[in-house]
Length: 279
Image (cartoon, rainbow, N blue to C red; front, side):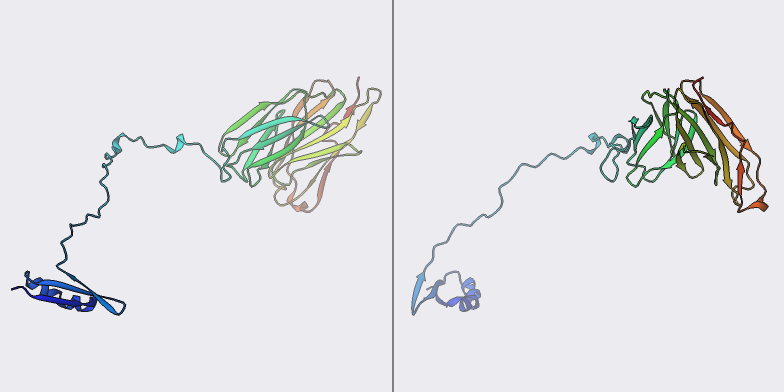
């Protein structure tokens, strides 16, 4: 004869579970408290097993790594820290006063030194933190081109726009080395200085009146320092007067005595005075 086992509440049911399992013939009676009364369940039917798994999905085929081509770094587009293409870009135009407007952008070369060459003369400049440079360069010839030499050996160039210089006279000097000399005119001739470091370019401009003949006197001055006293002066001169044929030549002078450090050297006849005339 089977045993009747009364389970009173959840706590007692746990305690008697081992007894019910030990006697398979026992009838389990569960008493659940509902309010002040009790509901009795006898001979509970057996429920089917529940299957709570996820639906089976087809397995993805294994990736064949041998068929995937690796992406080479040099095949990707190089971008700067600001997301701009690294390749340098040079834009030129005409500015006021028979000058060129030059805009250089090299986003991946911030603060780099570049050498700029025009009409056989060169000077150096430094790019900004964003790799850009804006310049206005007085034209030395009505037709010319410009080259930009980068520190990594790359060079870009372009032909400059045509400008009219028939009523303009210009004299340019380019110097190498530190503590370079400078030209000083004895009148109100316009002076533009370009460059930094050991390569600079100085350009003097004077307008020409067809009915006027003017002699612009020039002097060359240099501060004698410990860096410049033992080195000879070396430079390049370029002259363009109206539509006349341009004149270009080298210029040099002997090293200064280092006992004269602190003094200023003035050479009044090292350059031929600039004669401005239409005939």
